[in-house]
Length: 179
Image 1 (tube, rainbow, N blue to C red):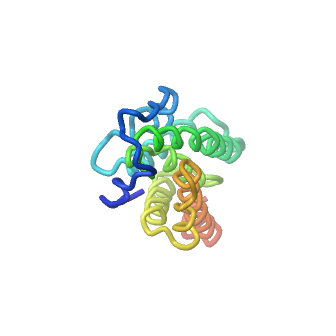
Image 2 (image 1 turned 135 degrees about the horizontal axis):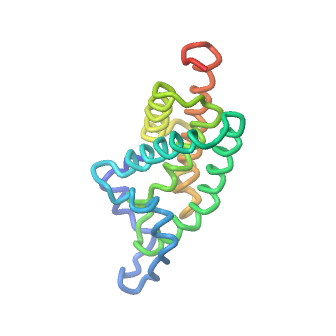
C-alpha cells in the first residue's frame, strides 16, 4: 500500500512516543510479516512479493484440489491475526497506518490468489492487480481505510484483494489467463 508522507505522519493521538505501550514481539513479527515490512523501497510491494513466493512454494506441497481452501484459510488467518497485530503497532508508534505494517498486503494478496492456478503468468498478474488496486483504492476501498486502527489498516487491503480477485477470475473464465 502506497502511503504518502502525511499518511505516515498521521498520529492517532498526541501521546509522546516514550509513554506509549510497546507492541509485543508477536505483533511486530506478524505485522511486518517476519521483517518483510522493513525492506525498502516499497515495503508493501515486498510484503506482496513475499506472499506470492510463499503461495508458489506452498503449491509445491499441496494438492491443486486443496489449494483454494488453503489459500482462503491463510487469508482468514492473516486477517484475524493481522488486525490485532496492526492495532498494537499503530498504538505503539502513534501512527494511523505505519508503512512497515504489511500483514494487510499479505491478506489482500492471498485473497487475490484464491482459486487461481499457479503459473508465473497468474502470479505476476495477481501481484500487479493487487498492488494496483491497493494503490488506487477504488470506492469503497478508500472508505475502509478510515476505520479505526487495525481494522482500517487491514480491511482496505482486503477490499483491494477482492477487486483483484474478481478481475483474476474474469481473466481465467474468459480465457485471457490459462487455467
